[in-house]
Image 1 (cartoon, rainbow, N blue to C red):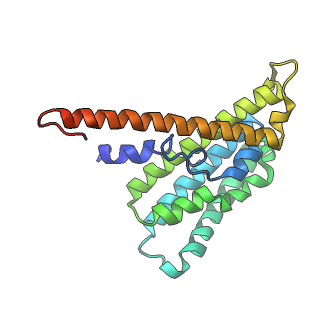
Image 2: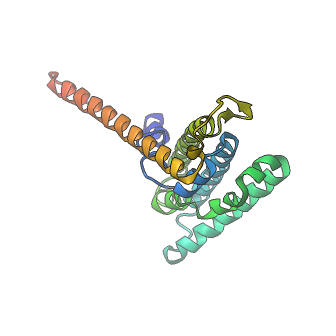
Image 3: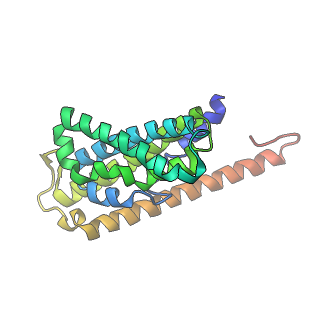
Length: 215
């Protein structure tokens, strides 16, 4: 069982990273990645909503009629986002201020709705849970990494600590965001391609062994 669930967890890290490989959630990625604090806050909030929505929709997949599944999913996600937003406002007001309108807009984040309609409504709760955790980690990691690059090189600071005397301010602006985003997508594709070639070579070596197989 663990062997079957592990790929569901790890695929979101790189192979099917929602930001760098599936190119989903581009709007919050570009808007929030100017600050590491905001990026982590958005990643955690979206991950919590993704996990809860995946589990809920998977549990109700045989109850929700197919004709109204999208409105039902949006209603479920909107309720969870409202709950998360209220908790963030109450306990982490600085993060709520940093995220602004993008926190309630998690409701229409294509990563969450896409996983709900394209995956969670077809698999068991266990598989759906591991998928959500992996996708959440991948989204948060990509968002945070991009924010580190933009904040350090574009603002010359990290977490309020001044680092560079003359930063490249354009990296904080939208054109710089698109440039960094494109570079990260290219790097992710290159890493996945290299990993695929290694796996292919491993499989060929397994087939060459007498009585061997590739698992």
